[in-house]
Image (tube, rainbow, N blue to C red; front, side, top):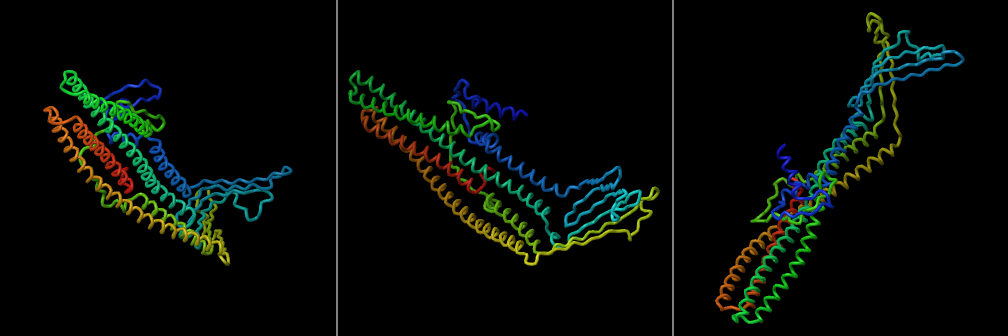
Length: 464
């Protein structure tokens, strides 16, 4: 309970719940990537809609199961005319649908009237019966009720994979937005740091120029550097605000209340290598492939149902009859008291059935072709992203080393400048190289994390 309370306190601390609320800045607020993903998965409308898919599929399966529910029935038919009781027919009981084309029914008939049809005549105390009907031809191995229930089960399993695909797609876009926000923040921080250094250098050179130790040209050059970096900082700040607003589109509370990211919030710094190794069974467990496999299973059920239509319809019905006795219910029961029937039909050319079966077989072939195409597409896409991730990682490692080396060169040049052995031009040149290297590092850090998210989404494991 405490953990849940802390979670919502974190949300309130990071965001304003109402768009028109007064803004506050918490400079120490860090929105980590794990916290961001947790909020998106729990509160984003798309994530909540994905969960509704599961509930809908569960409802469909419950609906299909209803075809096998026992059913109470009662049929009453009465005719009165010219103050005469022509007839009154009553038939009530319970019906039990079974699995293999079998249906059982138990009931009670009570009929009377002066114009009662002879075949409806029953004893005065009524007639109890037990009716068993079975399909021996069409519908014995598969019928519409069983097909609907099996397909509802497949639909429920497919919903799980459909939700995984939706969440993978959502998280890929959300993480791409997060790392773009990260890149904009880090670039702004690099330029801000460079501006502080330029302002410090300008003030120092200005003081030295006043006492004649430096020329006024150096003062002008250092002032231009301050102006240039101030302009770059304004541009970086505008980009950061844009990326922050884009990131906020993924932040919701319970899927109904959009949240605003505070101005003082900042991303979690990316450190070290993040080389991702996919699970060994990612290909076999991929939601898209499992979705196609389940679709194929559903089409096979449809094929079996259509194949049943090629058989003759042969329905056998047998009804046990019994006249109840007050002392012994089965006292007058006899196996000779029964009612039975047989119904047989078969279209001569069965063209409709053959056409339906042919269409289903075509659908199966189409699904198999789509499945093979998806297999190859996924393998190629994942392999390409794996190579891109490896190359980006290698570039990032080299760039980090290059940043360290440029910083050392800048520090050495600053020492020489303080000793009068260098010029402001060389200092600015070294510093620009250092800034460019830092910007390249930030860009690669964002790219590596974005490619990793794309790789995991392509492999269908980002949600997990």
